[in-house]
Image (cartoon, rainbow, N blue to C red; front, top):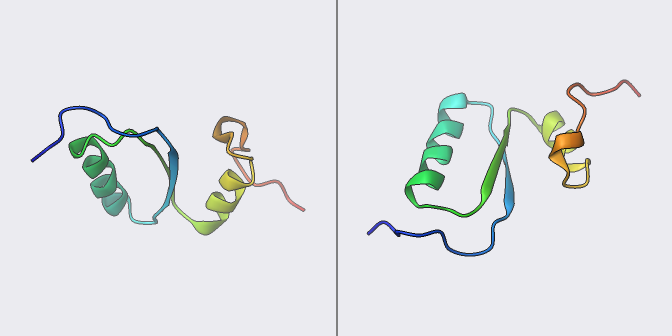
Length: 68
C-alpha cells in the first residue's frame, strides 16, 4: 500500500553514490513512498565532506573544493 500523504518532519538526507542509476533508484523510491525528506546526492566522499562541512547549508557549499 502506497501512502497518500507525506509523513514526518522533513530532513535533508545526503546520499553518497557514484552510480547515477543507483541514485536514481533511491530518488524514485523517495517519490513512490512519498518521503517528506529532501534528498541531496553527491557522487563521492570528497563532495560529501565538502557538503556536510558547509554546516547543513548546502546552498553555500563551494562548487569546487578550494586548495589547502
